[in-house]
Amino acid sequence: MGLTDLIASSLLQHHATSAQCIRFLDELLRNYPKHDLQVRFWDGQVWGAQSPRCTLILKYPGTLRRLCTDPSELSLGEAYIYDDVDIQGNIETVSELADHILAFGDTGVSDRLQLLRRFRELPNQNDGPLPEHRGRTLAGPLHSKKRDSQAVRYHYDLPPDFFALFLGSTMQYSSAYFCSWDEHDLEAAQKRKLDYICRKLRLTQGETLLDIGCGWGGLLTYAARHYGVRAVGITLSISQADAARERIRNAGLNQQCRVEVCDYRDLESDQLFDKIVSVGMFEHVGEKLLPDFFQMASRRLKTGGLFLNSGVSINAIKHRRGASFVDRYVFPDGDLVPISTALTAAEGAGFEVRDLENLREHYGLTLREWVRRLEEHAEQARRLTDDTTYRIWRLYMAGSAHRFLAGRLNSYHTLLLKGLPEDGLPLTRHGWYRD
Image (tube, rainbow, N blue to C red):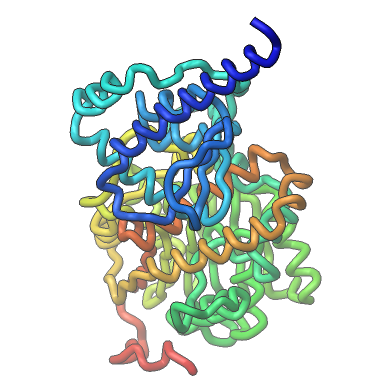
């Protein structure tokens, strides 16, 4: 056989294997309601939409078989971050596709295997490099102080400049507060959120405020500058604490604010605060320790004081169990619970629940803005970290946006009261809202 015949034979073989994959996808996704996805194979062949919202690129012949043999959130995520596949366009579309594939798997292993048997000629060779093991490697008992410190630093001790690429100048790593679905001014929406929290807490000049999990100090400095409070923030992240202290110095607020690297369980027992806030921290506490967390807050709060706890909760009905990409690569030991579990723990610590507001749509919109900004600064993100880290955060935030907007995750502001305030509380929410 001559060289020309060998090349022709090789091309025919490649086209045959991608053609087999195309027939498999026709069967696998015949009930998929979306028509905005395209799959591009290693040999240039395509399946799906001609004008796609998103293109999924399978780089190696064996990728499709591996993904469908044992599909999970973890295996699908690892295929992307280790460059087995690439994703062009709107990455949130992939979460919709993953939901469909995982739901197909929920119908039973036998159904999935029967489909694979009908397409047993699918290529199984893998030309891609085997990835080095990444992800969390934490030591110590679950939610011990030492292990919690490791988990927080794994997530937050990336360069602050990396977070600034998508969070913006406010450095708010929590849901913004939008006025409309088509608002795209993230900076304004985040400042609106900060003010909203301060008004819910009824902060006034000279009060003391404790911020549990203070991040990069944005809420501390906002409350001190605009409401005249004296604020203390705690975090387990040395990198965050350093950045927060710099923010405080630059704002000229050293006399009003300070930040400590401290576990919430190690706060000084004789220090009481007028108000307490915690934004995006109690997800790290662990379900078994939630009673201790709320009891700690009660002990640190003056009678009549308010505690605003803001955090993510799962929708217990729609929560999918199984291997978690986010737990392995993003939030080690994160423990999301239904809001009813958190409220039970808060009431058990003696708090009265004064208000509960779900901001899940706001968080979905916030995450979409973060993804857009990260993608715009992709090369900078890779220079500050690496390509795998960029892919992890792009996928994690896009998937989270989908989960919030699909109703599987919620983001609650829970306003809690200790005892009875001397002057009572307003009878309406009217004072919270401004044009």
